[in-house]
Image (tube, rainbow, N blue to C red; front, side, top):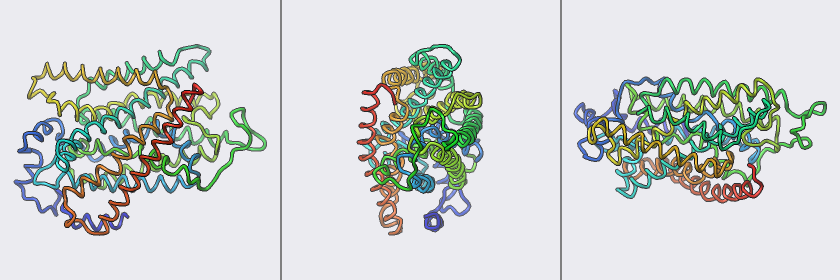
Length: 453
């Protein structure tokens, strides 16, 4: 796949690159859209003073995090075949990112957001569909972070001999997250936050990996968390569709790609920057997932922290992942909020600085309040991730970038092998969406009935 994509890239001009067929006038139009709709987005979406390293940090911060605690459970549902899926999803994530960037430049100007690219392809219906699905994806991700942080805070306090209700814990963490979410306006302002988030996530991955291997089941040692010897399988066929949905959740950064690319000084570096980011993300996922499945097999739970004993280093990793979520949430929610705010005209150029600030704080506060309410009502981390993955991630990851690319470039401009590949990706996304949604609903119903995830 990588080789085929490379060939196609050579045939498709890369805007702002040395081989671009766009003249300088069209390059200027890319960041100064003559369309009234797209002009709304230029002020926030294109701030070309970021580096490729900042882009990597933003994408890794979005991707690596609480997912590392859910993916070992995903592997237990699909077996060792999950390793192949991790690598495959990383390649697909890079490929659809490249396709989506091409779609951004399919006309004579740069289209500045995920929703506007979809609008260019499918009109107003496409615009509002993309806006809604983006909001579902980003808010669903933030929702899972609030849940895991709140439940783990309660768990840590319990280890210390205290008692704090999970609802109170979630409220506290939501208030802490609310501060950077409302204070920070664009991705350009949170690169340092992203770098810190990545470092904390990598620390947690290492701790989970080492601790899991140290406390895996053996005939000599098996702690109370084991219910007999765990089993391991190479492939569990019925778990593949839901596993694809869950794994794609970790790579589905398409909604943030226009903002990340719009902040890069050298946007022609986006393709290889995304490849590096996905490679690092895949490595982190494999490290935590493989070691977790080796240690706990079919008895792996989500989050995997609940498989581990009460150790200082594990508790430290738990605290670090909570801190990571606080720093990572702005990266995720700012992307979704920008789409909605800019669509509604919440910008200084339209409302003035003071009104824009007031409306931004109001809208983002309402968003955080709704997420907190849902978190308290459905505090089941693994099931929430699976549900969000099935509803939104499969669409954002597999379908929207592919459909926009084909529609905007035209069938006759795309090689047949690439059209076939796009069809395969869309079909996989459709199956993962339907089958994953069915499994997620069943799992959530079971969790609600039992009172735990």
